[in-house]
Length: 328
Image (cartoon, rainbow, N blue to C red; front, side, top):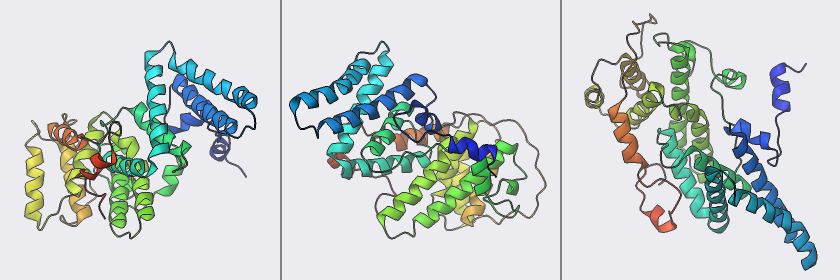
């Protein structure tokens, strides 16, 4: 028997020339949805025209593609013009230098898992993902909803499992519980990724990490900042509980007031890394006030974001990158 949720999935468009195809990939603006669908239509027309036997036939097939290009290049919206130009540039880059673009793409999704998202605008990142898909170098997956039926089915339910929202009985609300469970899953994937021997497996696991992280790192509230803090803490090497406590204390210096959310975050990372003993009690702690904005997270984001945008980068620029995780 087909459930309503399954029926909804079955009705999702699978043709990238359908504007609705992009709604499930995080494109909420109808104008942008249409632009992306038109880009695929134009690409397919030009590909068909290249196989034309006569010049007259080529012109007949290619003319609609040129009309699409003129439509967006001269659009009334300056933003639409800029998005169209960026998408065309990205398509050309993926066509001319796919190897370099694949390495840059991997660098960016690694940064994004850590919460660094300001290297390019959301529309530019979507254009990179679409250009990659159009070039045949990987699918642009649907955006994962952390509260969707699919996400719930993929999570364990045991209170003892850190990848289960039910593990976090001290959280302020259900959203925080879900975020912490997703963070634990990303942490596990990260450890698994560090044990891989092939580039393809490394990239596959990185993309899984990104799919889980994306809904959280794109938030502009305290949970987005919390994710960045937790990723920074979890990537450190600590020889003792004292070293970990020192790292936590340095981050706390950037906070004006006591921050219960950060305290819970530091405890979770400590448990995941094995530095802090797992909790024995499931009693909920007092909620306290919502935390203030993290100056440390903002500074760390700016530091990591330097030089990670695709635009203007070359193979030589990539060779100088010091982002860890790429060399393996």
